[in-house]
Length: 453
Ligand code: NAD
View (cartoon, protein in one colour):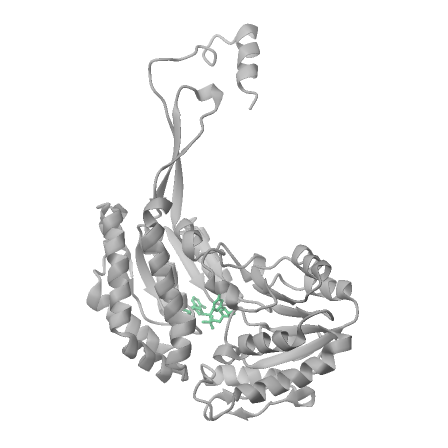
């Protein structure tokens, strides 16, 4: 690990990565490599958890391609030196901000969208002019292996290097001194990463998880709400960081919501036989989900095929905040539905819990919408939709508090891997004597005028 980081640092210190053409070339190469090996990428992810090529393209590769395209198109403008005004006290002078890469970065990925969550931060890091050590999740072993293979075959290890492995390898990597650590994963491991980074005062971006609520108010388009919500929840069998974790629906329409949600699941034919319905990533997670699924609260679904790691899309009703399913991020195809009478009480309840990564509001009532958006602190979200906000790269993506810190995609990704160096650039032909000794009342009078900002 030591040698990998030392080699990358040596390469970074040649300043080669700062060149815009170098960055553009590497981004284009990455795009070509991914596109040329799409079938191998599909095969690997199918072996890991039976994710279909359709979903792999739409929820992973398409987003990575878009990030690459966006970065290539805007790189020069994001990375250009920006002039700003100069205050009177410093005049005559120029003031400007130089965006500079942070250096040698570590990107630690999660398994649930292994390509998107591992490669998209790498795209941002390359665009900003860094070198990257990449640690994919060991839980999706085949996708980790294909990423390692493609990167090592096509890129200089002094620039991009994949280190495969689990806790031991990540722990060893975290002992190295990086200039930036970008971590995607659980809040629990996020704390370990943050502590390790603190030892070297390394800046971090933490893309974590949490329980993301979806509010459904009385005044909503219930049919459309159900359609969009069911898709968003059961995409990737609920193993999505921004999946709606639980529903808070107005009491008057909660029964109708359950009926329509069941009908929608049946219509979409999420089932054990459907090739587009992915597996739970491993046995440990099947066991975890089994434990929190209370059979007495099942409204629809609930069947578990332990051997094949499948859990039926499941709706739970009569759920309370005390139930096991409400004590942790579900990260699986189980949707607890709770009803509320007072929106204010529901908002207060959510506010008493850790700040979520996402929050969704299904309503046509702008007062309710504004209430929820202004009173609850969360990473990001959508009104009358769920999950889709991640596809707009103009929206910085990230959590707040326990759901994360920092954000990325589009320009925010570039910023995340960039230091903005501020420069005051002065000519030498003029120097007022005011700040120099001896200090006199006359000088103070003038200096206090100049220093009125
Ligand atoms: P995880 O935290 O278990 O693992 C993430 C990474 O950390 C992996 O690469 C793993 O090897 C490493 N790791 C695990 N234990 C470690 C330890 N003790 N020390 C050092 N490194 C360790 O998370 P996961 O199971 O891969 O993903 C699920 C979680 O990630 C969920 O909470 C989900 O919400 C969150 N997530 C967040 C986002 C986001 O963009 N905010 C995206 C996907 C997943």
